[in-house]
Each structure stands twice: as C-alpha cells, then as structure tokens.
Image 1: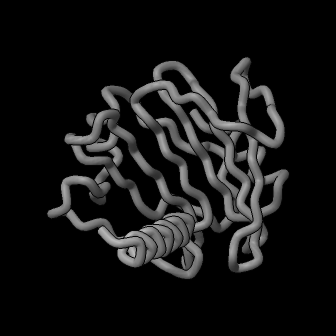
Image 2 (image 1 turned 180 degrees about the horizontal axis):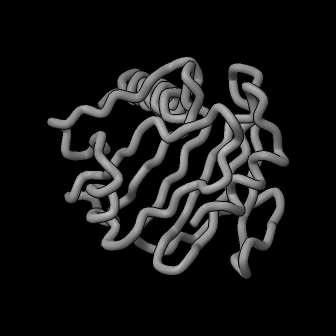
Length: 169
C-alpha cells in the first residue's frame, strides 16, 4: 500500500469513527444498526439484552423529565465480550448512551474520580465538535463494566448527569 493510500485509509477511518460517535450519542443523527453485519449491534428488546448479558440489564433509574429509553442494541455473539447499549433521549435525539459489558473493564485516564456505592467511577469530560460537552463515566459494578456518556445539551447539566450515573442499577 502506498503512503497516499495509507493516508486516505486513515482519513477514512477517522471520518467513519466521527460519524459513528456522533450518531451513537445523538448529535443530530440516528444510529441504524445493520442486522446483516455480524460486527454491528442489532436493535433488540430488553429481554434479548438480558439474555446476552446472562442477567438483568442495569438501567438508568433517575431519568430527568422528557428523557426515555429510545433504543436497545446488543453486540453480535461473535464479539469477544458481549455488550448491550441503551440509548436515552427526548423526542428529537439521543442524548445519553449507557454501555454494559458482560465483563469488567479497566477505565482509562480520568479527569476526576467519584465514588458511587463503593465503586470507583472514572469521569472524563470533553468538548464535542457541535459545541456541546460530553461527560463520560466508567466503572465496574458486580459482573458488569459500565460506561455512560451524557451530552450536556437540551437542558442536561453535570448535576443531572451525575444523578443519572449514580442511579444505574
């Protein structure tokens, strides 16, 4: 592969990653999983998600008014560790993404650490290209690795994001 082709491939990979990330956290897009692609999450029910995890699906119990569960995705059975993705939002777009992994995770570097029910929660924060801010939480709870991303827009703020993270059960 020539250097030009490598450069084009890397630019394409970055573009795809940005589009998928934007779609997943709902920055004006909608994620549509392709059921015929075994590497993608497929749209599913909570019962299917529970079966994939081998137990109950943790959910956000303290949702701010106007937010609701909008979609459930389940990783393909061919992936090394099964994960479930719960997308929450208002009628216009997805604002919150909770990913539950069937195995514990090792959170990466964090801006800060919080303690929820004796769990060490790594918290990160970053600006998104649309001018909003994303707050991410990563922690282990029982057999699950949990990652929550909240887009601080549409009336959501850090206090509400913290409350949602603390309420995951």
